[in-house]
Image 1: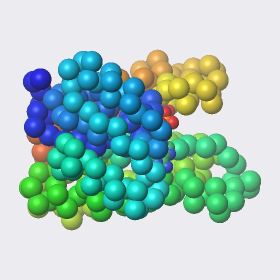
Image 2: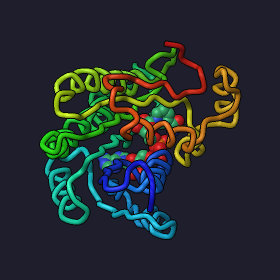
Image 3: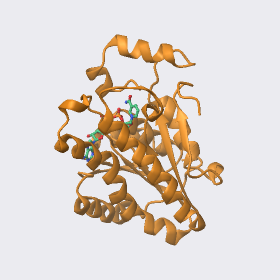
Image 4: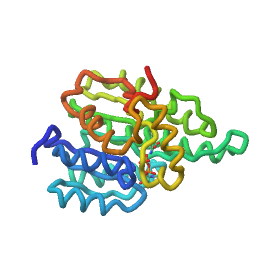
Length: 248
Ligand SMILES: NC(=O)c1ccc[n+]([C@@H]2O[C@H](COP(=O)([O-])OP(=O)(O)OC[C@H]3O[C@@H](n4cnc5c(N)ncnc54)[C@H](O)[C@@H]3O)[C@@H](O)[C@H]2O)c1
C-alpha cells in the first residue's frame, strides 16, 4: 500500500453511510488504517476496503453516548493504534418546520451533529496532541450559507460545528493538529435519494456553478487533502466543496 497516509490511523464516524463510506474507502486507498464508527453495521465497508488491499475495522458505537465513544476509542487503539485522523462525518438532517419542532427534536439533532463532536474530540484528541500530529475534519453543510426553510435545528447544529472547528483549531495548532470543516452541497446518497425527489436534486444542481448533482466521491479527494501533510498550514477553515453554490 502506498499513499499519503501510510502509517496513519483514521477514524471515520458514520462510515456505514453514503458520504462516510466514500471517505473510509479513500483514506484506506491513501494507506491509512481506518476505523469505521457507526451505530449501524459497517462490516460491508470493511470488506470492500480489505478486498481493495486496505486495512479497516468496524466499531459499533452510538456517538451520542459518551461512554460508548470512550469504549470505541479503547477498541480502536487496541486494534489499530491511536488515531491520527478524526473525521466527524455522522449526522442527521431531518426536515421539519420550526413551528412543529419540539425540544426533543432539536436535541436529537444537536446530540449527534454537535455534541458528538465534543465526545469524539475529547477521546481522540489527547493522543494526537501527545504525538505532535493530528487532523480533525468536521463535516458541516453549505446550508449554513443558504436561505433554506424547515431546517433550523440542522443549520444551527452545523453552524455550531463551524464555531467549534474555529475555536478548537486555535487551541491545538501548537501541537501539530489542524481542525477544519468540510461543507458539501446536496449529495446523492441512499438517505437523500430516499428522502428527496428528482426535482430537488435538479433544483440544487441548477443553483450550483457546476450543474450536476454532487456525489460522495466529489468530497473524498478534498478530505484526503485536508488530512494529509500537504494541508499542514490549513486550519480553522470551512471548505465549501459544493460546486460553487455558496460563494465566500
Ligand atoms: N447527503 C447530503 O446531501 C449532505 C449534504 C450536506 C451535508 N451532509 C452531511 O454529511 C454527513 C453524512 O451524510 P450522509 O448523507 O452520508 O448521511 P447517511 O444518512 O448516509 O449516513 C449517516 C451515517 O451516520 C450513522 N449514524 C446516525 N446516527 C448515529 C449515531 N447516533 N451514532 C453513530 N452513527 C450514527 C448512520 O448509521 C449512517 O451510517 C452528515 O453530517 C450530513 O449532515 C450531507
